[in-house]
Every structure is written in structure tokens, then in C-alpha cells.
Length: 408
Image 1 (cartoon, helix red, strand yellow):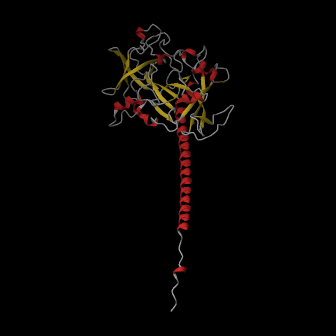
Image 2 (cartoon, one colour; image 1 turned 135 degrees about the vertical axis):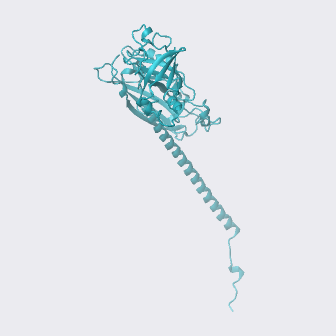
Image 3 (cartoon, one colour; image 1 turned 30 degrees about the vertical axis):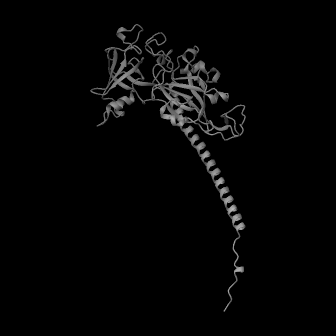
């Protein structure tokens, strides 16, 4: 029989060896965890940057689309438009927004947002006038005055109304008409003589016949029978056309005061990344130039700079000229600043650029640039990485709808 091995030859791990092994395994696990956490954090950060860039591109495309409709079915410069039947410059019944109506008006943003000001930037804002509700005007059956208002009856059997779906079986006609003519907006009537009349929409009625109610004195609608300015609506003006006129503003600002976006502005921001954040905001204005409630939209998050240049035709036979920001107010600024022989009706294209930043500051140094787009934005607050990455989108947008306007 073979003898049994002695217990002395059966040797296991000592306590010291076991502790060393456990410690090494623990350190390896911690290292893997730290690397994994850093990798995940980096991935999430880069993913947020990519998502912000995609959002900026989508928002910028919307801005481009709206600018390309500037002046569509509206006057490019109401104070000098020879086709307007009325005297907006001296007629007190014209609301300030209609009186200063321009296809595009570009102004400096006031006050300058905190982050932009700290980086020496001066964002601008742009206000556009045109039909942003539909693609066509609707024919009128008659226009009558009743009870201090102007009643505009629409032709029921018409192509434009049918294309809106108004005549479809089971259609919600009231909703369709209200969508095409939102209450509180301006409207333009083009009479059979080609003259333009403007009013403020007070109510919409689809039944028993489609009818729009215009305020009687905002502004006063001119009728030929009582006009002292040589133009006006003749009789019931059957066959005239009517369309909505919207005033759309894009600006750099905060939506912290809007309950719909309150979650984006936490009361305890992380490292001050969110406390001074701004966005590209789109809002609609009423005929008095005030924002319409519920129309503010966040178009691009973390936008901080929006600026413009323009190409203008100084005269019908002159070559196009490139107008930088310093002289832009002479062509597309507030109505009171536009010089003689100038105006938005002579703007042929708009060069615009929009800058957005990443949410977090993750760069230790900036990239100095003498001329060209900004690459880093200082968010302040100190720390080892105070700079956020920046993406800038640019485009030159033609305004084909104004090419036929040669009056100055």
C-alpha cells in the first residue's frame, strides 16, 4: 500500500499572499472603473456636443427658410411703398408695427446677453414681415362696413380655399380658416386696381359663409366713395385678394420666464453652465410690435451670437454692393434710420451667421482669431477649463421676392 502524503506537503496561500492578491484585484477593478467612467463621461460629452450641433443646423435651416420669405405678400417698406392706399407716415390709425412694416429690419440686441458681452460680442436680431401662414391669397366676394368693423366675405367656390381643404367632406372649416388667418395678425387686401390695403384681423367665421372681421380703425380701411387720397376700395371689391401678414422676430435671448422651458434653467445650475445660457428664439409680433403670447419658440439651444450683412442694389442700374454691419442700419435698420433712396426693398440677399456653444466648458485655452468665426467661448467662473467649444453656421440667402421692387 502507498503511504499517504504528509500534511506538510499540502501547502495553501498564506494570509499575506491572499491580502496582496485581493489588494491587486481591487486596484485593478478601481482602475477599470475609473477608465470606464472617464470614457463614458467623454462619450456623453461628445454626444451632447454632436446633438447641439445637429440642433443648431436644424434651427439655422429654419432661420434661412424664414428669411427667404421676407416680404412675401407684404410691403418691403411701408413708409415708401407707392402701392399702399393710405398714409401710414401721418395716419395715426396705423399701428406702429404696420406703420414701420419692412420685409426685414435688423437691429442690435438690447440689452446684450451677459456671456456675449463678456466676450466682446454684439448679437443682432432680425424682424421679418411677410405671409408665413400660407402660400397664397384668397379671393374676396365682398367687403362691407358694419358696426364699426369691416367684414370681408370670401368666395366659397375658389381654388385657394379648396386647396386649404375647406370644401372637403367632414372638414373642420372653422379650424382651417382660423389656421390660415390667425386672429390678431395683420392682413393685406390687394384691390382690383393693384393697390394694397392693410388691416388687423379681429375674428374668423366659417359658417354660414366664410368671413373675416377686420378692426374698423387699425388702420381705417379706405373706400373710394369717402377717400381723400385718390384711391380706395370700389363698391364691394369682388375679385380682390386677401392674405395674412406675419411679423416674425429671431433673437438671442433667454426663455427662463416661459413656463414651457423652465426645466432648461435649473435653480441650482451646474458650474454656472446654465445660469447665463441663451438660445436662438423665434417669436411672432402683433401689429403694435409686441410679442404674441404663446408664440415664442426655442429654435437652437445655447446660441449666443447672431449677426448679418447684406447685398444691396443702390440703384436699378448699379452693380450690387456688399454692406457690412456698420452701414446696415441705413438699408435694413429701424424705419427712422433708413436714409433717402435706401431701404429693405433694395436688399437682394442677406448674409447671416449663427454661433452656438457646447453646454459645458471643457477647454483650458482659447484659439485666438484675427478675422473669422469664433472657436472658443469663455463662460467665466474660472476653473481649469473655462472655455466652451463653438460652432458657427453661415449662409448667404437670396430674396427673390423683392427683385421686382425697383422704386426707391
